[in-house]
Length: 104
Image 1 (cartoon, rainbow, N blue to C red):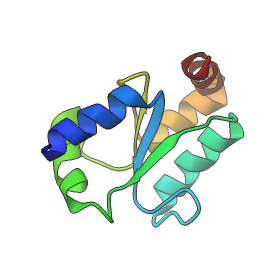
Image 2 (image 1 turned 180 degrees about the vertical axis):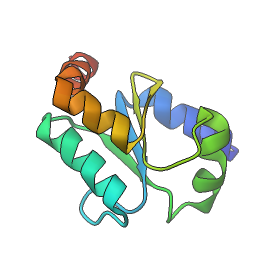
Image 3 (image 1 turned 120 degrees about the horizontal axis):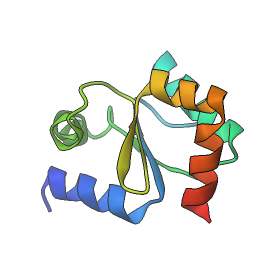
């Protein structure tokens, strides 16, 4: 399975996915850390992919999503966005609603 197929499979089989630098336990950048904190604050159970540990993912995800930066959050197969968008959604209450619906 090539990298784009793997990405598609991960996004389609997990209700909430974050492609990030590092892991939720040990984020390797501030943007990834803040995004994980927002997801955790919503009580969201999510799948994570460390793009630093998987160079093929890091190379191909921007092609898949048409989004150049990390982290990238997908909910129900759709790209939500990166850190700034996710934090804005958290502050407005939209992230909590979306994550609860995705996990229902």
